[in-house]
Image (cartoon, rainbow, N blue to C red; front, side, top):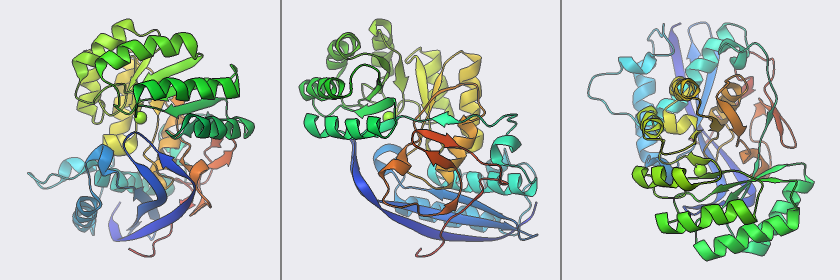
Length: 360
Ligand SMILES: [Mg+2]
């Protein structure tokens, strides 16, 4: 297919409730949107939310990389969509955030050209519905308990609880939530690198014993402490998930090789797009390592593409695609259908959505 035209935009949405982790607080969601148009007028959509606290890619870097990538693609033919980024000029380093946005748009375009929903174009036979957890931002214990109760009343049976700001307070946070929601709800704890190895060594068994049922505990220690993670894997009664330690395909492979986690958190922006995220899932499947399909704090094309991939890939055991729950309104048209904690990808070609292009 020949790329004829490209355009960039911005999608801004105020939040209904703030999103807080050990690393940052967000009150308005701002995603860069992009459109790629082929020579027959067919359109593909991509998007990216700059998340420098996690990826290191700033908005300025991403904008500059997107301008470069789209300039490179314009009036070019893309014959192999899985490997298009291998043909960039030698020596040019491009952020994975920007690669992801363009990669998703190209895949959306390919699936639309084939007249198939993306999940089917990716090789899926059935479109399984996804059940996502709801994230409870890190806050005072009573605030978290209240948010958790609201989520359970809205139909969520798994809660992703953000901890990692203070080890002692973390115990009070999780206990308060457990007391409030009862024992039918499953917890997923995410420390976002906030504990030392000693703290994690004390907290992980304590949470497993006192606050279960717990599906997993995510990224207890700093991203580069692979040896420390591997030691924690040996003592943990619940699965440990590597998130910030497994950003790229290479890092995910290292975590698997070193047995530094029981499971991986996969995000398209971390990996650098659909192709690379699928490669991580394929590798995980080969090693019987289950995966959590997650996303940055985003709802655009990247988020939707993650849902399409999760709907068909056997390595995906858990789903953490709940960003929409924080928004005050839906900022685009079409796309994944939400029903409480359930997400379902549709039958429309590609991602089946259109994003706003104004304001860039
Ligand atoms: Mg995480």
